[in-house]
Picture 1 (tube, rainbow, N blue to C red):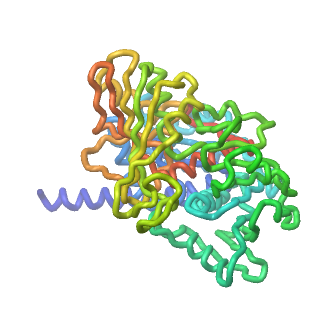
Picture 2 (cartoon, rainbow, N blue to C red; picture 1 turned 90 degrees about the vertical axis):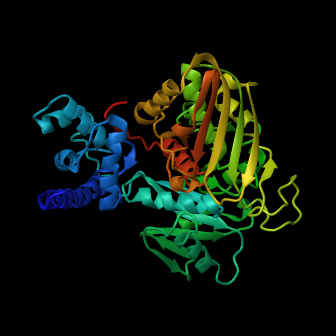
Picture 3 (spheres, helix red, strand yellow; picture 1 turned 180 degrees about the vertical axis):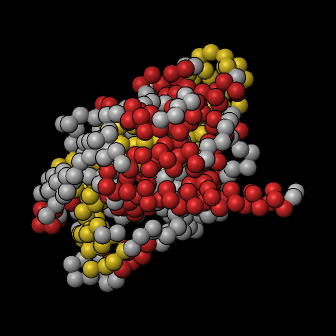
Length: 482
């Protein structure tokens, strides 16, 4: 290779790097001022590094078969920054490809047409309209919910984390809680600052003042004493899963609704956001976000059911170990779970197959399920062994699910990857409910086997927040239109 070619390649890289650097303040301005969330073919752009932005542009080649450059998207951000936009989710990658495919010459006119219902709709509501959120419990899911809620508050998301309830604390408890939020062995360091107000028993997380409330039961809590009113209580403890137990929260002054981060029992609606979230009614005071596995499999099952039909099937979950298991062999009320989690694969039960039918009634009686806990701390896999209603092929199934992950109404629930090299740790932090591994798909006539990865902690927490947004009337327009 000639020296001129070497110099040209490096100069091109520097130019693209400079444009990506220039995109960051535009992305931030749109997010914090206008509550406009930008993405690039489903990849979030807010709070991303220069290199991540460049890598996500490269990803578009896998989807569209054509290169997308920051030279195409930077002008879109510049134009949007001057349009006085209202709250919206905008995929600038899809807009850039559409503009190129249409052979357009007037970018601003194109954007004003595409973003018509959001242009000029800027809202400055100040502190009005915020919904108070309380986390009851502060374990794995509670801490991730705190991270996500604080992150989204920066863009005027209208959900405000106001308090965290934990059992009576010993000396140094507040500092320990702050440290666990600040550092995580799986998800890495918290991106921001955390201060501790020992006197008031509070954490200040990226400027969000969060009261720490010590109580051994909901009966001990009066949220109004902390200025918290009409709050949604997110119960992360799993101690209560029926209406009687969870109803204790509704007896607390200042609480108005309860969301459980586990499968609910009895008549409690189990919600998989994006699938059956339309059944939520204003009068529903207690809701369940179902389980991480149910959230992972139901969107994929829904997509397959819609196109091919499902006669019957089996769901096998290969699940990361959890706090419910023992580090070393010890007594446990459940079968096999008393054996050392880091040293064994443990066969156990899962209610995901039956729970799937609650979200998708057409699957009632059609699925069986089982689970194997394995010695990894996070990211699980669901293997869907299905008999379809009609014959198909690997190529057709993969093309269909890839398209669903990019252009359907459930694109936030389904992701798609097709690489012979990916492993579980590659999906830590993925915000989708499940990720279809196209390389592993098997189809033989009506028999199909699908492998679905999922971050059983973070991906699930994102689904929980989507329910919180819905019941708090936090709605976004999506562009380009799906």
